[in-house]
Amino acid sequence: MNKHLFFTLAFITALLAILTHTFFVWAFAVLLTQVGLGTLLAFIIDILTIGYGKDVASWIAHKRGYQSCGCDEREALLNKYTKINIIQNIKL
Image 1 (cartoon, one colour):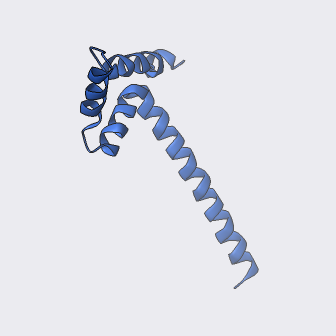
Image 2 (cartoon, rainbow, N blue to C red; image 1 turned 90 degrees about the vertical axis):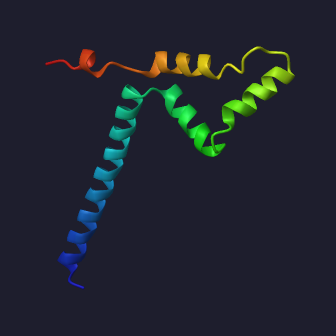
């Protein structure tokens, strides 16, 4: 393989890796600003528990004597502190 072609391909590969990483960081930041960490966490728990996460947490909470599992309150609290209004933070 030609030496210049090798370095060109290496440069393009490195540039694509940087751009891909930057895109995923940007996408995660946008997701957090529009969805919130609480909603994202609830979604991940729903996927991992096949939709039974809140039911199991409620069952355990009732067995331990609590009225609620605290899922909704935790989600609202996390959303309150991580959801950012993008429009207010843009300086023109």
